[in-house]
Image (cartoon, rainbow, N blue to C red; front, side, top):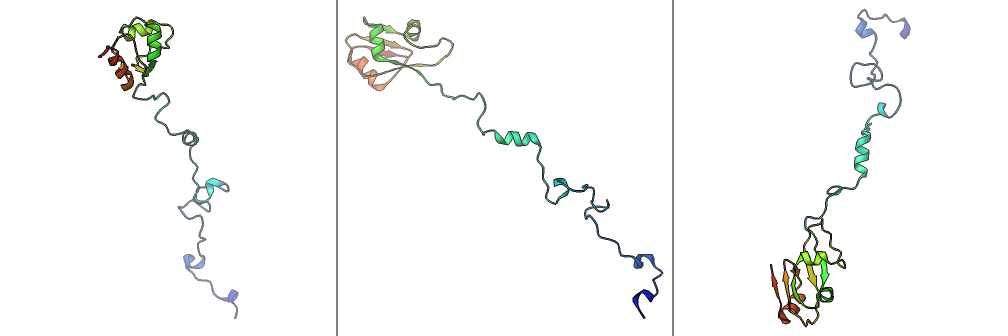
Length: 147
C-alpha cells in the first residue's frame, strides 16, 4: 500500500493545512504592507521630512536671542581729558554729543569710563560706570563720582 492509495479524511479542516502567511492580521500574504521596499520590511521607520530638517539646525536659545546683560559702552579716561580739558561735569548726554565717541542714541546701554592716568583738573562723573583705577585717579585729582 502507498500513501496515495490511503483514504482521504471526510473532515475538510483535517484534509488541508492552512498556509502561514504575513503574520500580523488577516490580510493575506503581505499583511497590508504591499510587495517590496523599505516600508514592507520589518523595523521600517521612516521619519517625516520636516523632522529631519529640524534636527539639522544647531540647538541654540533662539535666532534673535541676545545676552540678558547689556555690555557697557567703553570710554577711555584719556579721551575725556582730550575733549574736556577744563574739567567739570561729565554726563552721558554730554558724551553722546561729542562726535569722536561711537555712542548710538537708540541703544540704551550704560557708559563705563576706563583707564588710569594722572589728572590735572577735577571731574564730576554723573550716571556713568567707572572702573576702580579710573575712580582712584578722579578722586585723587579732587573730582567725584555721582550716581
